[in-house]
Length: 276
Image 1 (spheres, rainbow, N blue to C red):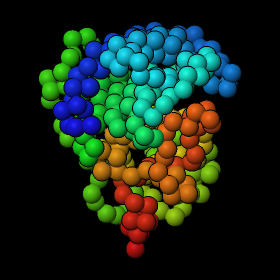
Image 2: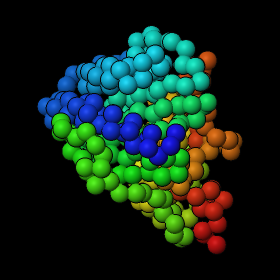
Image 3: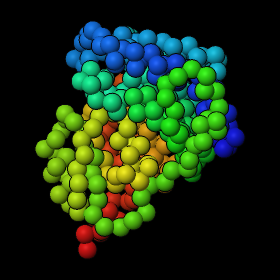
Image 4: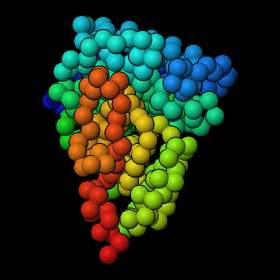
């Protein structure tokens, strides 16, 4: 995709992303009932309604293109994804959302030939939007979840880049999963600070130079990671599986389950060498 294509797609998505963010903030502020899915993960009406809103809009923007969305998949939708498809997580970080943490996100990614070609991550409670702006560029804008935003340029977006500095690293960890295993993994790195948070916003903190490494040593699905990885890679970051491979997308045969992976601002060998 060209830079112009990235920008046109972002502007097409902005109205529905803002609408979904506003809907989610209404439930976030007022509270809502929580149900449990078959995999024992929580789901709320905010997840379901926001997804329905986004999927309807995507079907108009990309007629005929397969859409793999978290709640539809949980409800039994097993359509073939093909080589080009969309991944949607309309409310990533549902546990954080329920608990009152503000880093939950909306994630939309376009996948081509097994890799994210475009990604958008929006944290409505933080008014923080991050999008790819080509294969090697990403932008960020502060936009509250209000209607009327139809062009990203109107929000004065700024380019983002991973941290170029050397020294001790800032590590990110999930709030509630595989904590001990992650701590053991991080023993090989000169960690000066550890921060715990949920959702794809961890990718965004690395992409904007706030953090350096995020090991994910537990189960995630492709809709959890695609948009965040797209932004991270476009901002100059890195992501490899625990065996050193790129993360592949479109793994329908394994229900879109990801292997363990590590996201980082620089190659892992470089981050380890910072301690010398």
